[in-house]
Amino acid sequence: MREAIINYVRAGYPGLYLISAEEQRVCAELKSVAQEIGFHLYSWSATDGIVDTEKGTVTEAHDPLEALLAVEDLPKKSLLLLRDFHLFLEDPNPILVRKLKDVLQVAKTKSKPLLVLGCRLCLPPELDRELAVVEFTLPTTTALNVVLGGVLASAALPTLADAERDVVLDAARGLTTIEAENAFALSFVQANAMVPAIIAREKAQAVKKNGLLEIIDARESLSNVGGLDVLKDWLIKRKDAFSQRARDYGLPTPKGLLILGIPGTGKSLTAKATAKVFDIPLLRLDAGRLFASLVGQSESNLRSVIAIAEAIAPCVLWIDEIEKGFSGSKGSGATDGGTSARVFGSFINWMQEKQAPVFVVATANDVTQLPPELLRKGRFDELFFVDLPNQQEREAIWKIQIQKYGRNPKDFDFAILAKSTEAFTGSEIEAVFVEALYQAFHKSKEPTDLTVAEILVDFVPLSRLMAEQISALRQWAKGRTRRATNEQGEPRLRKIIA
Image (cartoon, rainbow, N blue to C red):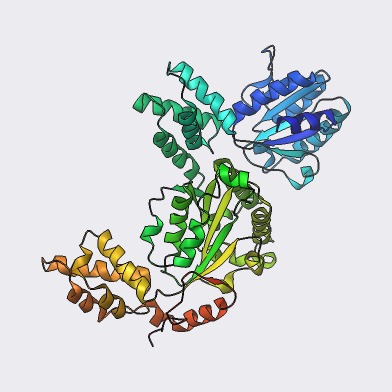
């Protein structure tokens, strides 16, 4: 960002719009830029007026229009940083817009660039072409290392070994400098040391605040997933794909995978387990929350998500039921002025071109709602279809569920249970066992095969409720997707109960 600002100023750009939530970091960067190129830096805010950052003198100009009028009195080769000025541009006064355009003309001829600083992009159409936009990325590990060094020095803690320092910095990736400093300080207060778990917990809270992303504590592994041997093998072959050894070998960074299938068949569970396989953080994106009512806010939300994901990278970005978030992109022009289409277009373009090691795992239930652009090669490395579990997979699922709820698998006949639950999904098998637990608890007994059989009498599986939709999904997936299960020795499609 530093080089970009220097080049813009030297090229004579009259105004820049700086997007960042890190005001202190931007101010420090601009002081360094001004010193390097021989400019004088002034800073304006509605509370302070115009402050000479070098001498500390103040010019009374609390109104934004007064600030623009004062530009005429600034010396040549001056940078004026307008803090929070974007708030006055949300529903702007026409006089303010006109004056800003006039001042930008003066700024170009007299070397007095204006720098608008805001946490988000907010420009009226009249100013769209007047200001160049520079978006500050979240700090790199190098910048975070400087912050860490300052905290260690102020707390009189010993310097960390390289390996320990790398773990701490990994835990802080994706935080602003202020957030990282606070997290480091909290770790010192709580444990008198730099504890990665404390820092990661604070990062999870910070990321969650915008409501778009959530850091998931992925405890599930592939051993918690019953069956899906082909999909598991595909992931295991890529478990070291983000390592230095893979880069040295010349492997391209994997882009991600789309898991399509019947609801309740383990798609979300597999997405969580993927992060465990790669041993990298898991971020969950609610695609529906990207869209906002304010003009430009949806696009800004997407940029924020991408910035956080790339700052935390390598990471897994999990988008659950992606069709619900982007299903409206086809008819977007008639419903929301094209916002959904623009956001979707920006998202798939990022997926295609991204260089940061962000592995996207998307799950979907209804393929008819997915835009065709999302499915073509280059967006995802592979498209898997998850069908109803076969006999062997159901046996594995029963064993996992019985162990999960603290019972001894040896007390149950898996073959009989699996046969009795043909055409059941994994989540339905869990629901049956949970219901059996409740029934046994009510009778002050332990659940048995007989208890499960009693529950199955009245249990209606999804394959019966939605037989037509499942058949259509299977038909679409045939020849278009890779099956997540090795079908050798099994019928191609599990029977759907009529």
